[in-house]
Length: 406
Image (cartoon, rainbow, N blue to C red; front, side, top):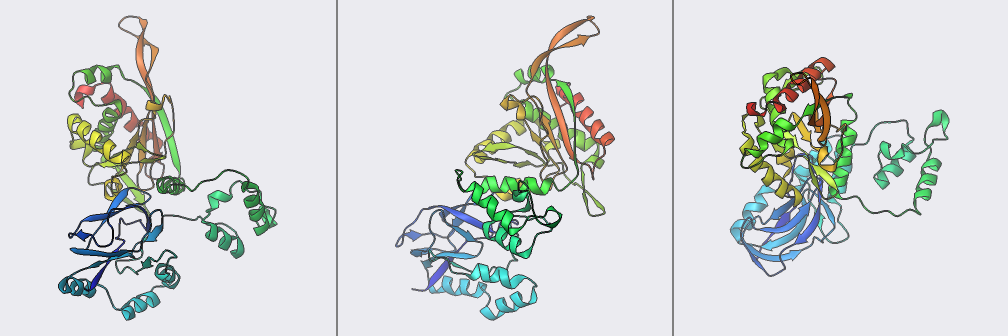
């Protein structure tokens, strides 16, 4: 019978490769169309590779814990003549692929890497949907071609060289400096970074390329804690903060914008992310139209996202976009922090742990105990100035101290 290849699909706009987590079928097993047969892990989530058509598994070339590029052939299905013909028509002839490679500067090297046969038998296939964007972003610097080649070989970035004292001209890092540094760390215990850890590291490097600023204040959480007792389901303080930020941004559309070059990109919807701890990293699923979503709906949505997030089942699309995010570092007992907004977001609101503190009550002419928390707003200073950020944070605090408005 003719065979149809099982291809590593395009898993997101910024995904270039994925690692095999598990293989759920064996050669000889019958499968249906769109049946999930392989689990793969990217730097954002765990997703499934499905069958292109019905048939019988002929062979699986992929191996668990191995990483394959988008477009790699992971195995084959014995299929009907009709399906084999249909999928054969979807793939461009080799001549077309070669023309594409020659027309796009710099494509030859990437194509050669994609077509290289892996030692475990899985073969890569060039995708015609556009070259996947690499997850790693290497910064610019005055480094010799030899040093850069060695960095590329070891998958190092400029940030990894920050701890090396250069001995070259102008204190630049030489190949000898790099090799000495690598020799020094050989005696230390090391392990490969997980996909999510590497993804977080890359996002933070790109975020830090912008001029970021942080402002902070304090908020009385007693009104939120009182209001929470009257609700079912009961939202956590982070959801109150998310809802308050969404309403404040809806009232002030100018703050819900990002700067792209010399143009201000206005957000059409108030989409806000919520940082969730997942294994050894952080994922930030986006809640769409947060200003139009009630606290009760936010609570149910949040519980669903936490469940998906901890099992790494949140897709890249669920994490893309958004104008802002909320980080509740108070759950770790932290009073104050400066969370960093994601590269494609303008700001992030941080909420610290609530603590009993004395506050002056004018009506009683005495100090009274209140549950006070520190609240911060970190923002892209290109898009928002201190005055605008201050007014936005003040409005968020006003809403949190009057939760009936939420």
